[in-house]
Image (cartoon, rainbow, N blue to C red):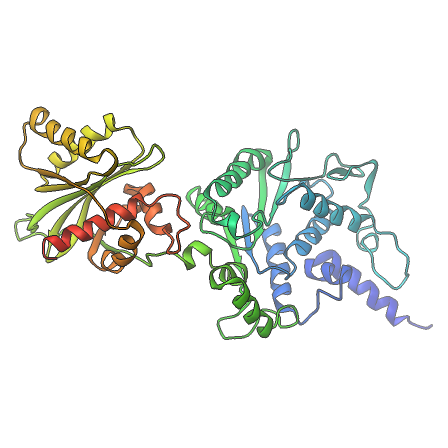
Length: 465
């Protein structure tokens, strides 16, 4: 009796493809999913492990052209082979991409066998078929199921669809969008208000994208789900490895990588290929000093030689008022209080006055540009008439120096000599975000926090600090 070894090998490959996601991908696209492409093996294994675990969310950050979207569409197909009752919902940048993604999944399942030697989907999962008459472009069902797949985008709809698996694929189009706070906020609103509302109890989320900005969907999701105590997996892949080798030389060689870096600029290349968000690569402040306890004497009395404040009033309705109070010890500034708000002046004037009174501030300097003089006079009046205090010397001055030049030139002093409470991120979250995200090259929606903080440095210079 002759044994057909090729038939046995083919049967083994099909059985492996049923069990292991990487071997499924390899059976469907052997020219791309090669054994020696270790990063694809790792990606597929991580996605399968996530699917089989009780983890809630998987975030994959990977360079372009390395098979992110292809693997995501393969994953949807493999998942249906594991469980025909799954309901998969995918979200892409726009309707065109979401349609392309949907067609890749649907067509992969529906592939008709033409060559007996080539393995197709029906060889691996013969029980999985698209329901006849229910194969619309972006919404379709499997035989024995109902509404198993929906592809959508931030401009699309998800009404009436419940998902057991959500997959988000590369929402950001380019660097301009990555630097647009409004666009990033719209992405987050769509994800939380539309996509998450469709997720069924016990459902899983997969976000696959190139990292662009610290506030992009991947960054916001990491922070949000960690706070929610959800089980989060993160897989990050860099095109250029730490040891100088490439993630996959066949797909992107070192020569091509260096050429792309020169062409697109280091910050964009770092986001695209190294998963370092643009705003982190280009931000002005690299870090800040903190304190757990204020400098005190043996009797627990503060050792400050003076307590000072600096205020930058809101120039326009969209600007923030920023008032910073700090104590001085050893030529260092220890931040005690920050008011950072868009509230109107009728609210901020008494709030600033009360803070100056509560912290026993010796001197407050207020920029008199764009209404600052009137603000300063009212703060002084509230202190003297309402709070019966003449402790604080309130003065105002016109700031004539270039704002960006001031902020940039004083950045090193700010990082080295201003100390914040260790929990300053929680105490003043909006101020913290503004300081941590401020860009060196002028991609900033607001500069009120760095401007007032620079005023702290300039005040210290006047004090001889």
